[in-house]
Structure formats: structure tokens, C-alpha cells
Amino acid sequence: MTAQPAPSYAPPPGPPRARMKPGNWVLLILGVLLSTLGIGMTIAGSIVLGAAAAQSGGYLTGGTKQYQGTGYALTSPSVVVDPWSEGMPPVGDLASVQVRAEAVVPDQEVFVGIAKASDVQAYLRDVPVTPLSGASWSQSGEGQMSWRDRDRTTPGNRAPAAPAEQDFWTESATGSGAQTISWEVQPGQWSLVVMNADASRPVWVDLQAGARSDLLGPIGSGLLIPGIIAVVIGIPLLLLGSAGLGRNIDLAGPRPGQGPGATLAGNAGWERTPASVYPVRLAGYLDSRLSRGLWLVKWLLAIPHYIVLALLWFALVVSTIAAGIVILFTGRYPRSWFCFNVGVLRWSWRVGFYGYSALGTDRYPPFTLATAEYPAELDVAYPQRLSHGLVLVKWWLLAIPHLLIVGIFTSGSGLVWSRSWGDGASVSSWGLSLLGVLILITAVILLFTARYPYEIFAFVMGLNRWSYRLAAYVLLMRDEYPPFRLDQGADEPPAAAPSEGPPRPGAPGTAAGNGTPEPGKTPGAARPGPGTVGPEAAPGAGGPGTAPGAPGPWPAAPGPDADGSGAAPGSSAPGPGADPGGPGPAR
Image (tube, rainbow, N blue to C red):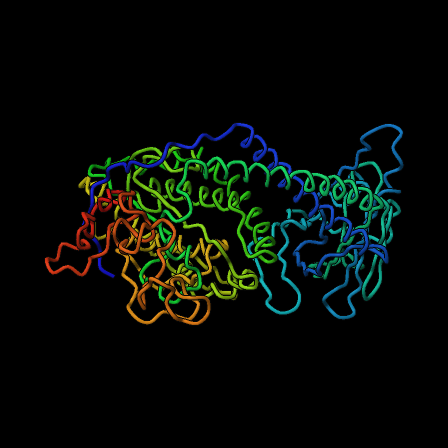
């Protein structure tokens, strides 16, 4: 839980920059657009077809609402029905409306009718009426809400005649109890009127409206079928594009046995792995000089990145689902999709480091999924094997404790307050998250002093590091459970050496299954993991799993030497806090 000293950033001598083939980007973008459009159309078509099936026995009706007006009538806004083309079927054959009204006051007779808007206007001229859009209302049943300041009754000085005596109504019903009218939609301008049958005031009724249309079936099919076709075409294009981009990244990236946590990746299932190493490396190096006010417009400058990331995260979700199916049957994560998903996380972290996840640099993030010379970097070690069954539960059930903690860190769920009003209604407000509060404090300090306190930066890095470790676990990239640790500082903490002890039966460096050393091996000596050269390669010499002389992914761990330099005997490995990517021990 202690922060490391503030290191300075120097670009590591990494591999050549990956070339992203334009064809892969085209496939990805077309796949994302077709998939999103197809999923939307499929969902909409399913809803419409469900509505068509529900109306087979009658009308689709909404909930009952209670309306009260101080005028002589409740009136709806006039509705204009206009046939859109010659030769179309009559509108009444395509849609019909049902209205049900019932007086709230017992034994009060109610009237409900539909008529031409001009006839209604002439009938209610100079009569105080209340528009339904302005009447006070309450939801019937439990949890009533009233808005008594919305009664907008129009002025007037005349009482109308009994509505049932008028002959201009197209459809009408009057009497005690529930009164229902059904109206086949016709061209023209129409109004709905609800009154007491004796033309008295006020009017207090329960209203329920419903509708049916023979167009729902064809509309639903017209949305569902093209939507399914778009999904069937879009998903493969998306997966091909993401796999192609992943291969582009992999060609320029470290091979198996290199990179952060490679020891864990190569020896999955070996019980004596370093406890303090998680195979996700997140690094961010604070700029020595930051602008006072650039943070005010970074949200605007980062909009192009936000648009690209929206497309990439959709592709990441789809490729993760596809990878999960593959893992379930084979126990392996397709490497090209893995590299692509790591690239999306890497891109997101760079934008967050530039923006409002850290405000750690003023350098504009590069538009690339691959590693680049930028003061924020992220990498995940590729797993050689993954559990077949764990993929079904780790992304939701096992991750719940971490999700709750990270939710407090990065969302406003922990800062909620409510205010109650006189009639029982309440309003909830969402506050800033812990990370948001720290970034806001940092922004204010930057504005007045142009400096970023490293203690705050180290803590912000710890929060982000926890979040991205959890993201890698939830996205099925690793089976190792994320540690409940707030590892602060610019880079990952030093890797601890594995504890000494007799090897587990069947562990690397032992004869198959009997726990006895192989010929030429001493008891307790493990076979070198991928990327190591000879048994003298020690954890911490350039990072776990790296070859001597290769760039290490993080500062080396302190060794057992007596001089406290932190280097293994005979090596020139850097000590804690040294630049990641610095040279390892000489061969």
C-alpha cells in the first residue's frame, strides 16, 4: 500500500511498431455497424411481433390513470389523421383505438366521446374545460403521485348542454360504471371528450387507452428478418477484423515467455508462483510539467478517441463472447482475439491517462492498438491454458466482490442522497466517485499551481490498476483471481521471488508425477520458465520470465545479496523504482 518514488518517463527500446492493415479496420468497422444495426432491428422487430401477438385477443392497453379537472370537460389535444398516399387501404382497416372511462365518484354517470375537432370546439366554446395534458393526475394503486399545480382549466362563463343530447359524436358511450368506446381511425382532425353525463363540474375519472393495428405483424417481420441477416453478416466481419488487427499487434509484440507475468502464464497451475505478481501490467508516468488549464477542454479534444473506443468496445464484447465459447470447449483463448482485446484495453487506458481517469499527461494519445512511445502503457500476459468451466462463472459471480469495490472507486453509487417532497415523491441524486473526487482535487491544484501532487497521482494509479486487473479477469483473459491490493505508483510493484520448498509432484523440474528430481536436477530446482536461459535466471532480473539481457516489464525485485542493491549476484538488474524496460543482467 506504499507509493513508489516518482520515476521519470523514458521510452523503452521496444519492438518495432505494428502496422495495422487498413483492410482489417474496414472489416471491423463494417462488422460493428452491421452488428449494431442488426441487433437494434432484431430487438425492435421482436418487440413489435410480441405486441402483434398480444393484441390477437383484443387491444394493447396501457395502465389506468386517474384524471381530475375543475372544468366541465376533459379534452384531448386534437389529432390529425392524414392518409399518406393514394391507393393505400382505408386507415380504419389498419388501426383502431379503444378508450375506457369510469367515474371515481360512486353512482356518478360518465360520458366519453370522439368527434371532429371543429364540432367539439363549437360545443365547448366559452365553457371552462381542462386539457388532459394539463389535468392533475395520479397513478392508481399503490405509490400514488399527484401534481396538483398542473390544472390548466381554460376560462369560460357558460355551462354546456348534456353531451349525450348532441348528435355530432362519431363514437360515444354514457352511463354509470365503466364506459368503453372503440373507434376505427379515420382521416380528419379529431378530439376526445370526457364529461359527467349531467354536464356538471368537476370531472374526476379513471381513463385507460388501448390500440390495435394490423400493421404490427408486417412491420415486426420487416424489422426482424433484415436485422437477423445484418447480424449474421456483421458478426463474422467483426470477428475477422478484430482477429486481423490482433495478428498485426502480435507480430510486433513479445513472444510467449516475455512480458509481464510470463512466469504465471507459462506455469499455470504451479502452486509456487510469486504471490505479488499479477499478469496484468499497467504503467503511467507523470509528466514533469502539466498545463494549468488544458484539463478544461480535454473532454472536447478526446471526442475522436471516444467515438473510436465506442466501436472498439462493442467489438471487444463480441470477441470476448466468441472467445468464451472457444475456451469452454478447448481451454485456450484464441491469440489474435486476445491481442486485439488487450489493444482495446491499452487504448482505453491511454485515453483515460490523458483524460479524466488520471490527468497524468498532456501528450495526445496515439490512434493505435499496439504498444507505442507513450507515458501510459498496459499489457496482459497471454495464458497458455484456461479453465473450461471457470469461464461460465468468473465474469459475474466470482467477480462480485471486486465489482462492488471498484464500483465505489469509479462510480457515484457510494454518494447518493434523497430529498422528499410534500406529497411523498422523492428525488435521488448521484455524486462523484472516489476517483472523480481525486481528479477534481487534482484539476483545481493544477489550475492554481501547475503541479500534480505525486501522492495523489500514486493513489489514482492504484485505483486504475485495480480496475484494469479486474477488467482483464472479467474479460476472461486470466484465471488468476485479482488480488485485493491497491498497488500505488507509476508502475507495477517489484515481483517477489517464489518461496523455497520441495516441488509439488508433477511440477516443472521433476520426473513425471513422482516428485523426484530428473537426472541432473537438484531437489527443489525448477525448470526454467519460458523466456529464461538456464537455471541461473532469477525472478526479478529484468522481470519475471524474461531472458537475461532482455528488456524487463517492470523494476526488478530486491535480491538476496547483502549490499542491499536489489540485484541478483553477478547481475546488473535495476533495483526498485528503475525504469521499466531497462536492460536486464548481462549474459
